[in-house]
Image 1: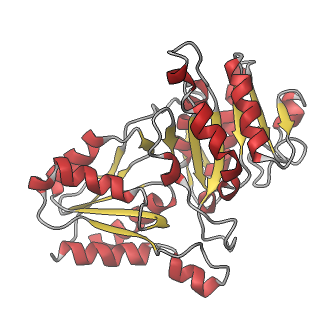
Image 2: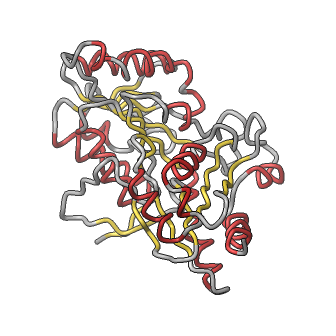
Length: 328
């Protein structure tokens, strides 16, 4: 079993799926000769050729539109949006076409495609290279929204996404591309099912719900406060849509307190859906109000490093929120 980075896991998943199914191809800006801006597709152009690892124009609407058309005719495109911040020119194609095609055709047409995009801040990217966009897509029936937090899940979930009959939004925490490492089996196929959340740390005093980079930080924070006698359960949501209400409510019933963490803006962020789920179906199990810890409601992550640190959620902020909630 080898220890690899998150971005290496993403590359392995695409490599294996290209080999597994000749209908799979990659389409995006600089994914070919350059191997992607984060080198997620490095070596795949040389291995599979220019007809299956295709450099696109700098046009996100085109990337997604071509992917939808190809999927309708039996291909399985992996469309890369270089940064999630630039996905909005393709918004209409994703929402009005990809998400609705199966429904509007009464099941005659499906769109088996993956749209990959690195998201999130903390790398000094400033306003247009740091956004978290997952909440825009996590309310759209017809889409599946997946965010891995470790190499094992990144590989297994991406492989499952490529084989899924529906369009899957696959957002990758770019700060964790090389920071997060984990063991991934080398000689067995990994397929992690889309849908179920996962309890990654058992605890009894309160639950922290998180995903992506924030899940990594939540585990750090949980270990910090464990030395203070606070026993924290951590749940990696992994799939944002469809939401895994069963796992969320089971954990709240066990611990009676919930802290939801994400780096997107607080208002309208994905944490609101988790909080609403708990309020509607788990209210009687609560011993304290549901807490959310998220980015502030400002238009973007500042470029200034001190201001970026002010904006970003980190393990210390999570640990402080845990202490406050535990004391309630």
